[in-house]
Image (cartoon, rainbow, N blue to C red; front, side, top):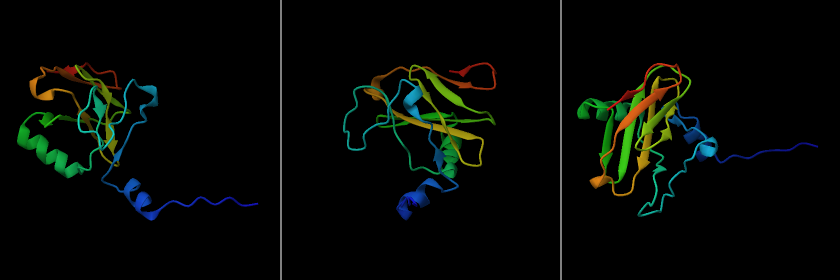
Length: 133
């Protein structure tokens, strides 16, 4: 007996795009993904981005720092060839890596971000010191 698995081509093409993030599974972290239709968030949640690697690199250059905000969404990028990177301190979330790249990114929706005072840091898995501001 044979079992067949059918995957819609639209899903397959999105998940195999060379310029997309390999999202980290959040089951081992104390974190959740945001619900797309959610207008207001009560706790920080990961916002899946449709931004390309090139778009995030351009924004990083424009901002001059690896962290920026858009409304209630905080985005951070980090570049290093490591197995994993955690974004930390005021908001804690694992970062996800672009396929075939050393660029890591995370977008987090944060309640009341417009009035929040946040510290941030990057914790790469290679044991190097915490990079923060």
